[in-house]
Amino acid sequence: MAGVKLDRLNRVSLRDRVLDVLQGHIVSGTLAPGQRLHDSELAQQLGVSRTPVREALQHLQAIGLVEAVPGAMTRVTKMDAGDAAAVFPVVAHLHALAARLAVEALEPAHIDRLRRCNDELLEAASAGDKDAMIAADTEFHDVFIELAGNPVLTDLLDRLTPRVRRYEYALFDDAAGHASAHDHDQIVEAAQARDVAALCGLVERNWLSFGDVVVRQLQGERAPS
Image (cartoon, rainbow, N blue to C red; front, top):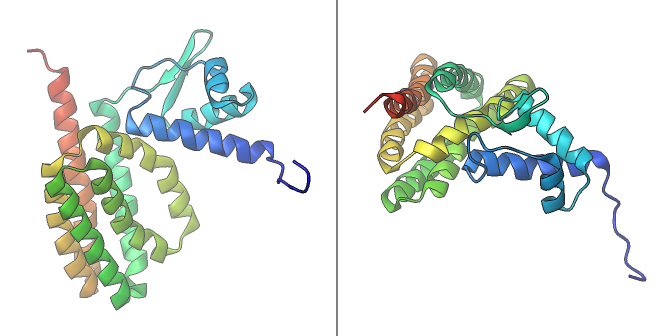
């Protein structure tokens, strides 16, 4: 490859790339809850050494997507009602805080972006396109996170959101998409009016409502027939 200069990949960036791949597959359900993870097999499939895979698995364990049984195995954590009941209220509160911090920075362009995202959510829900629904919903709430400009808040959500996202991929259907879009309409109106109390309450309720749906569905799956 004479004349071609490539930047050398350092170990940290390689770890992050492995992490992105594994986290994406866990969140989307390609790597299913309860599935065993072998670092040697993963390394071989990804074409990397075992070190960045092990580091990625350690991070995934820290954020609750992977669990290790000492001396036995590493596996994708299961999704259950108890975990959902624990994580959704925290995420809901953090998103409400993001809205509170962001409201003074909201400009007409941001309101337009919120409306566009919600239109895309409705279109995706009508088409039954789950990936597009989740993407639109994510961008909608990202408006507040970005404007909040609080790195601690962002870091906390970065750690918790993948756990919530798994439930969305598993259970966020067109009915949930339409219900969320209805909530978003009210959120936009409160944001445009700069009604902080209403805005925060609506954002928190939006997350808690879907969390309640998730918990009920998971409890239903567990209930005897």
